[in-house]
Length: 155
Image (cartoon, rainbow, N blue to C red; front, side, top):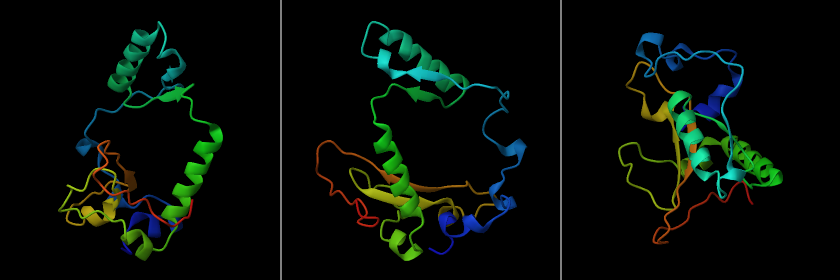
């Protein structure tokens, strides 16, 4: 687990060549640099403008691949606390994060299980790697899977 991105990337001054995919190998065409990204107002999604919001979402997905959502109803203090907990988790020692690691060969663990994975672990045989460590907490509404949210950091 020492090779996990979150365990060594904080000391870097530049992105390592192993994590820079050459332009000719990137999956999408280069995009135009813009001053703004799409902003979607979810506050309108439950009213008469629902179809407009859906069209805006589809357009943002197709043209940009990402967007900003406003008026979503999630309190700012909850978002701030979530970011704080994520940062604390990724700062944990490798051994603690290993308890939640996903086996690259067995990607069937779904439901409400918490999975931790890293590009460093899964792409050792490839020339270029994605720059990511991921904490994924899927939700299975039938409740059959055990919830395994990390106990550290405590919340």
